Amino acid sequence: MTNIGSIISIVGVLIGLLIILIYSLKGRDIDRRVIFLFIFLSVAFAILFNIEFKESPTPIVRAVFDKIENMPPGSRVLLSFDYDPAMKPEVGPMANSFVRHCMAKGHKLYLMTLWATGHALMIESIEEVLKPEFPDAVYGTDYTSLSFKAGGVGVLNVIVTDFQKMYPTDDNNTELSELPIFEGVKSATNMDLILPIGGGFPGPKEWILFIGDPGNVPVAPGLAAVVAPQIYPYYPKQAIGLLGGVKGAAEYESELRQRYPQFQDSEATALKMMGPQTMAHIVVMAFIIIGNISYFRSRRKNIDA
Image 1 (cartoon, helix red, strand yellow):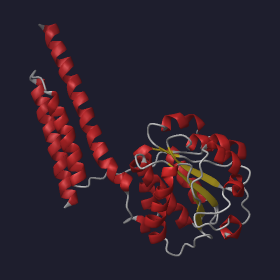
Image 2 (cartoon, rainbow, N blue to C red; image 1 turned 60 degrees about the horizontal axis):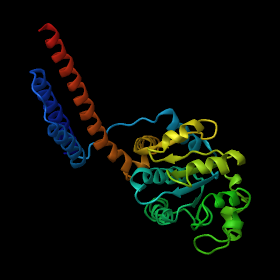
Image 3 (cartoon, one colour; image 1 turned 90 degrees about the vertical axis):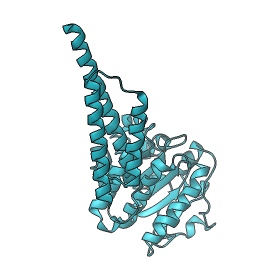
Image 4 (cartoon, rainbow, N blue to C red; image 1 turned 30 degrees about the vertical axis):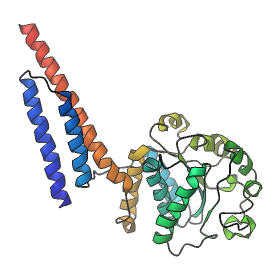
């Protein structure tokens, strides 16, 4: 039903665009409300029929995937939820994908946040992704969660030398020294990889400047699309790769599904969001092409006249 709906939607939109092209070539103006209507219909159809397009990871996303994939099991990965509910639709899928990938590879996950609003979102990923999909994972041995600490970059300045000075206990008020996962871990520089997710301050940029660069720790950020261009200059030396916006998250979800069949039925929020976004972009590009054809045709008519 979904495939039939998808085909009907795409064919319907394309026929509509063809009619508008013909209408435009006859020299008639197109009301701007028609453009809005087409954008609405293309997005509505994509949501209604759950249209998904195939995604392939770009080199900058594949670099992150390959890093997690190629590290030996038991590697230490710090995942920081530095975002709020408003940013969650864009970067939340990245966090869930990182949790799935790291746990599937048997890495040790250290979950934390520099944002007060990120703590609830971190717990949400634990309860809705980590625990149901990896019931054998043991808290304190395979993963741990640290409570939010106020202080912004001050927190980073402390944990770059000593975790326990900033976090005497974890979320359950257990001393870090009592958790097996912290054996041999004194500071953030003992991590094998840091995955900061967000787009504000403090966020991925500060993780690179205060932990990754001085501590020589690989950093692979997941970013809101509007912030991603600010981090590109750090790639590939200070950021081994990055995920930018919903597109980056969808590329990662797609690669994860292909490599790990057990995640085929897992929720892929970013892939679903790319359907409406792609359809809307196709319609916008089509109207740009139609507008240019109409303009040059009318210009030629004026010259001939």
